[in-house]
Length: 277
Image (cartoon, rainbow, N blue to C red):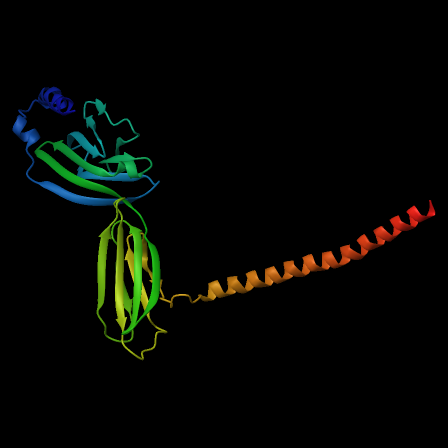
């Protein structure tokens, strides 16, 4: 792979000098004035566009992407003379937008596309390098509860399995400090838990935790409930289930009551018939 990377430079540099009639040194094409480090998040199963620089196709000489995926290293490149290079062979391709800007397109972003994307764009005047860490954007699951302890009550709010890590804040009518922890899970996601100690004899009606995450632009509001208590939706569901069970029991009982007399009548008919013979 490193040989192929170097070969593209060796082949393309003479072509550039011939095409433009300018002296382009190897130092100009390999040394960048700076390296831009970024972190990008994309939704799973959606298309993803990764931009290296703001240079357009008219300004560019070539664009090379060196992709470091889990257990794999590949590259995608394009030159102004029309030649292309692709060892990834997973659907990724270089495209240009309506204004002429260049970007790497991933048709359907999956967990397998997570990794480090190194790009180099050469243009007439210098080069631009960027190292972009690409990760999946995963919304967390939200759980909340009230824990009754021997020395008081603690409100707990958890954001489980999110990427990036969620942020939790509390909305209360009193001043109190929360203790928040963040844990990285084995699959690369994060679990964030916030614990808020409630002062004694305070109203819990307006207590709520606010979870912010890139998946929810407006945030997510959750109201902690005591363990074992039911929400309004849960209470309604339980009532409906009880009513349905009672109705089913009534139907089965009615059928059984009606079935027994008909069975007894059938037995009497059989006795009369056997006696007559």
